[in-house]
Image (tube, rainbow, N blue to C red; front, side, top):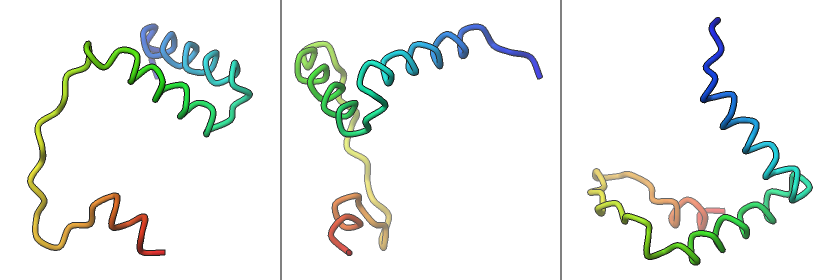
Length: 65
């Protein structure tokens, strides 16, 4: 299988960022949320998606436990 240089570079960068936070998922999420807030004016919001009948939203799924 051919190695894609761009994909390898992205994986390496993601690993380095994860390593900075001790591979702690919650710390990584907080980091990315802080970046999202900091650069909110640069982000493009995706249009709302229509849900098909009977589909489960992430909020519904989280409260079903």
